[in-house]
Image (cartoon, rainbow, N blue to C red; front, side, top):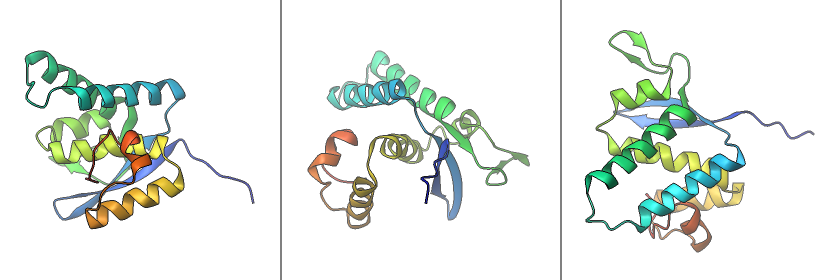
Length: 147
């Protein structure tokens, strides 16, 4: 049986009691490198550093991730009666929901940089709020607990 791949990964995202399916782009190698470098940069930044430069850098990172790597599946989300289809539209609607944005950004990295086995380990850790397996800590930005 041949291996069948698609240009996107589905992400069923729970939002306010509903599931909205996003499509996450299968990244090119240079995009994965950029994503890992940006996540490492943010992890190494001082947690108390909320300077304008740090905040702008984080916002630019999230904006690029959502606008370049995310679409909304057809019929999944409407805002003021209009269908939402782009990551940019999703970002404008949910800009204040940092919990959602963080999940989407992490999912982009996990889907593009983890093996199937690593994804299963990460999902198990998230279900139980268990410590993240060591090999996944580096991929998921160095966090000690699954989020």
